[in-house]
Image (cartoon, rainbow, N blue to C red; front, side, top):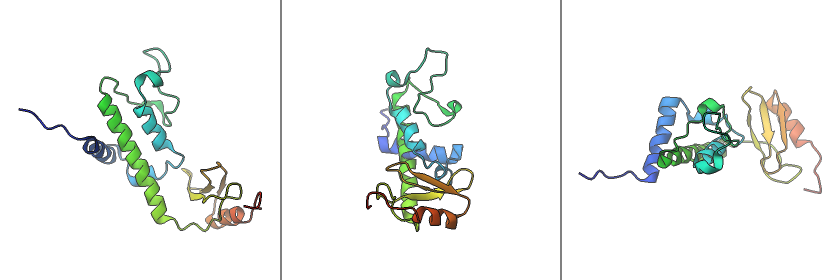
Length: 161
């Protein structure tokens, strides 16, 4: 009997659900990865094995783009679809993380004084308040949100932006 193959989107949704239920990688967990980690991890799995090989077999072959501890790198080069399934689920997690940020965005921060783009405001893994511009990589950290907003918003504008 021919079994119907799952579509790519079904496989990705299944993997994302597994990540949440089995690994504990919930949206709250993912929110802490605010420097592109999820997208970098997806890129590592999406890259063909030939392009991510860094050393000889038997050694640590964790790709340089992999953002997490090497123990979390679990390639399955014998099953390319499985690797792409992991990559897709990580991309879905990153999209969900960014959408959640947009929905919660109540930032009082002014535009970045260097490039004029809207900065991200959140917390780092130590609980400090962070303002960061992803366009030009300017970042500021403070222990209190009001201090962060005051410092960020009172910097001089550069080049009339």
